[in-house]
Image (cartoon, rainbow, N blue to C red):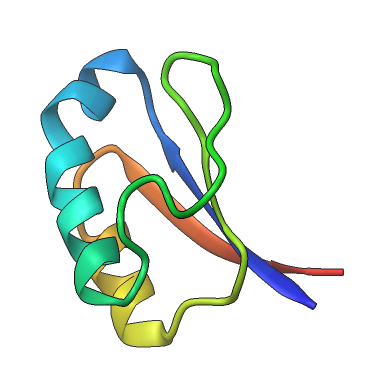
Length: 72
């Protein structure tokens, strides 16, 4: 089983980039609110499946955003 973890460097990176991250996830079949997030600032997004390399590339291409697939 795998999940994709998306982190932001800091609150500023979250405020600047969250809309773009949400748009990429929406386009990938994960509408906002359909996946768990932490209540911390900046939040950590937990996508319950591994995202493809193309989506990971888009997310990791955003300054201050880090996405990685974790397997258990």
